[in-house]
Length: 58
Image (cartoon, rainbow, N blue to C red; front, side, top):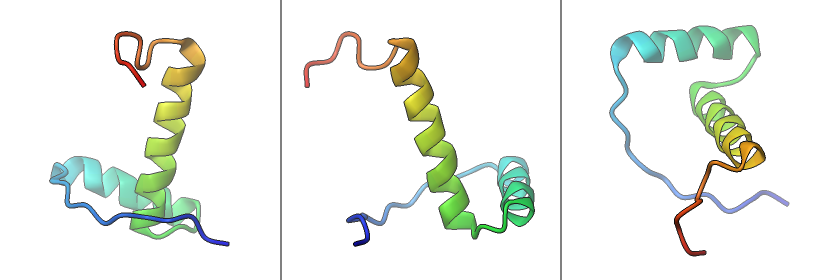
């Protein structure tokens, strides 16, 4: 079963988007999937280091 998603709009600098597109091509992903993958890895990394959400209540 697919996870629920929510569509958002984000302005991304052209140079960064070109890098994301290049990585997506290498990994055989589309742009959207590559951005979700990158964001997921970033959040997981922060959580693993214990830095994320330190001062925020859940």
